[in-house]
Length: 255
Image 1 (cartoon, rainbow, N blue to C red):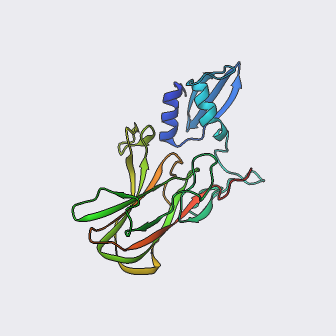
Image 2: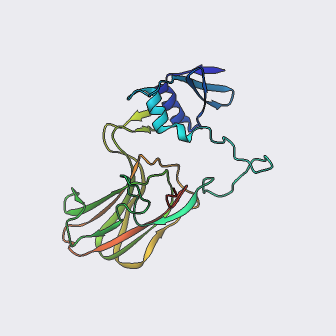
Image 3: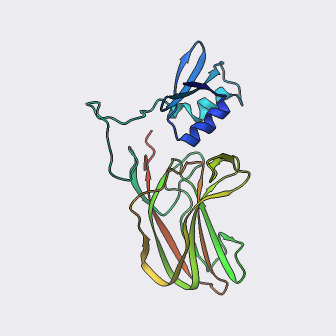
C-alpha cells in the first residue's frame, strides 16, 4: 500500500514512527519515502535552482537530505544482519562529559556550558520554591545523544538540597505527547524528567553515581538538557558538579 503525504505531514509521521528517510531524484523532483511493513509513505518535492527560501525543498535540503538513504538494517561485509546485545546504539560511542557543546558557529564539542554550580554567587539562579534557592544549568549537544548514567559530586550540601535532570523541547520544535500525537512546543516544554529530586547532603568528593542497565531513547540535538540544583535559602557556600555518560556518534569534529 502506498500513501502520499504533504511534506509537513510526512515529516510529522516520520518523526512519530522513528523511520529512516530515503530519496531519489526523478523528473526534477525529490521522491522521498519510508516503509513500515507493507505500507510505503512518500511525498514529492519539486526542485528549483536556486531553492526558494521557506520552501519544502529548502527545508529538506538544509535539514534532512544529509541524513537520508542510510541503511535500514545494518549488515556486515557478508551481508548478514548485525544484532547488538548492548544498549549502545549502532555506530555511536561512549562519551563522558561535564560540559555541553558550543552550538553556535564555529561549533565545538565539549566547549559549551559546564555542569558546575556554586552558591557563593548568583550565577544561573532562577526562581525557586519558598525558602529555597535554585540554580538552572541549560546545555545542548550538536548531535543526537542517548543518556546512560550520571554522577553528582558535591561539597557542603545543606540538609534538604536536591538535584533534578530534565530534557526540554524548545518552543518551535515538535515532541511526542503521551497519547502519541506529534505536538508543536509553544515554549520550553519538559519532555523527560530523568532524575527526580535526588537528595544530597554533606560532602561527596568521590561522587554519587546513578546507574542503569540501558540507555534512554534518542534525544535530538534540537532539544536541551537542564540540571536544577535546589538548596535552602540559607546556603551561601555549597558547590559541586555533575558528570554524564552519554552515547553519541562523534566526540570530535573532523573536517
